[in-house]
Length: 196
Image (cartoon, rainbow, N blue to C red; front, side):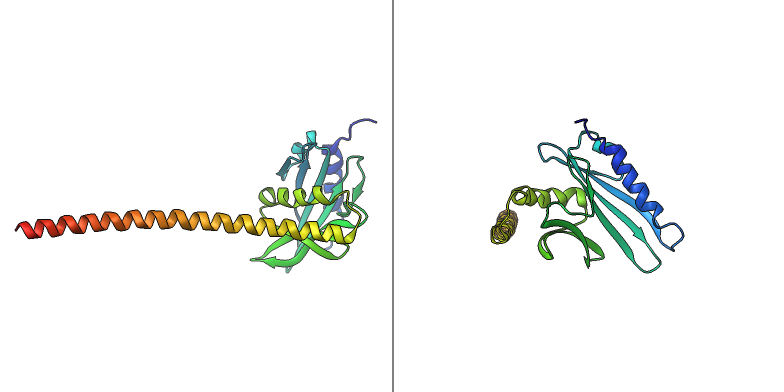
């Protein structure tokens, strides 16, 4: 089978999406092209050139109206099949309207249950989501999928807390050094005053 031309296919999908809003009071903004390579390396861009070495890709289309911001997710698998974010029979990617600081979230879902979500910037956060999906893609049991997702979130929380503790220790160390410098300075001032 010939290699899929993801640049051409994704550009076609972006044009189809853009053309679907013509004359309806909506304004197409752009498409985020997310390239997924064999080694699960993720690259993001608003131009499709990054898809030249992709084995799979995700497209996040954005458009606006006067009062709302809309997103649509499309997934193109290794065979060139385009879906509305459906990764497997039970796992999918969806943009949720529930936003953090007007920032939409991209969710990995099992049926309608959210397993994991990330916010923009996509380039920083989609690799985390894809890492979890890579662990889940061959699983079939609902219990196993949900357990792996829950453990993944817990591991992430532990790593975040560990980083916060390290930051706290470093900050504490700096404050102790500063305190010692002030103490030495006060001791020098006292010594100078006592000599007078």
